[in-house]
Length: 153
Image (cartoon, rainbow, N blue to C red; front, side, top):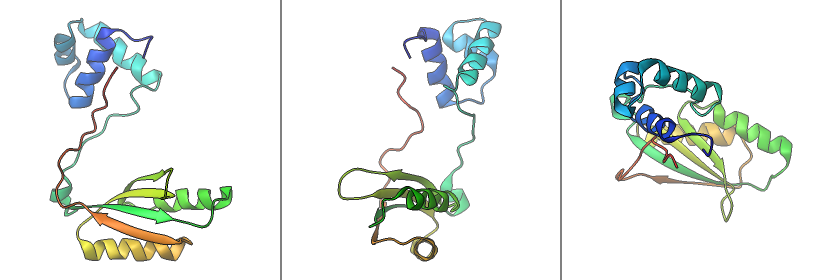
């Protein structure tokens, strides 16, 4: 972020909070003209700082109120298996994120499902496609904080 100034940082903060606002509104918020603001947005998109603009959907309205973190251990660590794992978890719409981790776990999966029965279906499909040593799940009882807004240094 060393090549970006205060206006870029303010613009990124504002866009992360609500990218649906007009360029005019964003320009007023950061203190630049409409055209200068539009050019900055375009540059941030072209440079890959802004990856895409999306809508945040309420999971409860889609009957996806249960957040699950799935811990995975495996005995396989070769490139072919890792690629297969990556492709498999990407094919499950319930899986929002999958991460290779250090420590006792090999992978951590973040999923959203309707209930424990739906999680069991996800679990069964997952183990039918992948050779896994151990799978365990933690169900979120209360969401204390979750955001999509990254701190802009």
